[in-house]
Length: 129
Image (cartoon, rainbow, N blue to C red; front, side):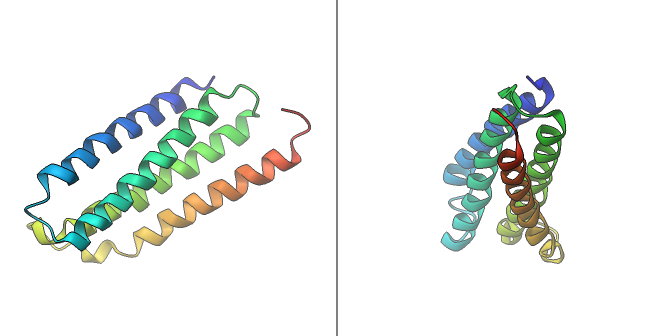
């Protein structure tokens, strides 16, 4: 077991629930329906990848490099993709202009994609599980 990865996944999952509840209840009167939907996308992708972190961290069957590289890519994806989505969707409620960070969102999405591709490649080439 990779305890730090599991803990990170659990923290990201917990924060996804908190942010989801905040979006559903606290932001309803502040944001447009479109901005709330965008916020929800960030929450959803954060939760998917938090669960993936927990899974790969608990699996003792994967080589350390596979686990750590996949976890790093998923963590970067959460921070860059979901983090930028949160800021961009909150734009109308923020006191500063966050629109300049829009270029970060696809970088985070690319981290998710590369993480899944890397993980797939390592599983395919793994001798046994």
